[in-house]
Image 1 (cartoon, helix red, strand yellow):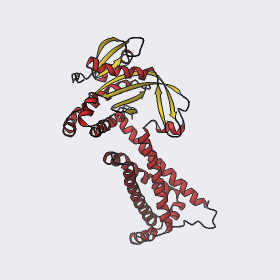
Image 2: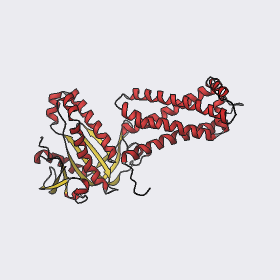
Image 3: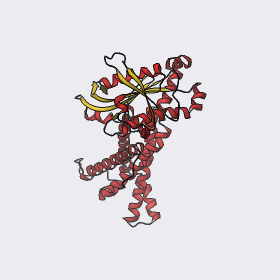
Image 4: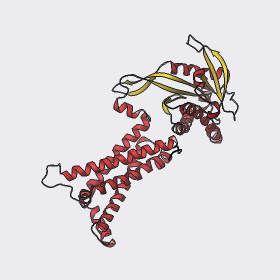
Length: 377
């Protein structure tokens, strides 16, 4: 309906759910077509279990099975796994997912057989339920189960690799979008932990690493909410990027920083109890033309951004400590935003010659009007 806007995080989850459902529908239908076409060149198909007879006689049943399996497993991915097992090891996550997927396949197969016998064969409930036991013991069902597990491994591999490589990066790498360097207009937000050296010395490397894990875990959900992409994590620094295809992304970049700061403050008791401190981050924003290229080779490939936009943002980050400000941004970025709409206060610092640059840049700082600037080093 006109006027209804879908939040970026909801839109992302709906796209993921649609992809998972499409995967199951297409894969099961392909399997049924291959089985039905009897491409094995054997005189008689070796997979003539009752489950396959059902699927062969009515491909609509296969489509519905794919829809239901896709919806159950997709909902589990986005609303169960994402919340409760995201911090587990890669192998443990894979095993848990396979268990849920396998259970879903068995349940959906049983339901499919039952409704087929009840409404297509006109069997009563008792005989239909008794026939299910026979179906579960057929070679055809075992084969279907193995195929289901292989399909589960396939979709799990794609989703896990997408999470590890990064949303917005996986598909371009797969399809070679940036094999040849391309230019794009982008926004970049650099954030860096304040007093990181002191924290590392006080906490020790292992505990300090856990602190960074917790901080960036909190950051990731907000990046999704504000429709950004995480370009990279470098030590205690993170770089988030947006395409300049929507004016609202300028505000998203600003709001992400301040919401992240507010989230860390709201979890102050947790961080204080666990680490004896509350982390505070500084940030720098910049926008403009960059070159994007896939770099690396056989051992490792990744998407890299090159250009003065990133260099200047990195230099501006250094100004936060000098001028005791949380977030620094240049004049051309300020010109693209309405402070009241973005719920920030903008103040001019002055014309600054950034380290390694030949020309001065008109620099501003942004702050949350409901919260004074931090004075942490």
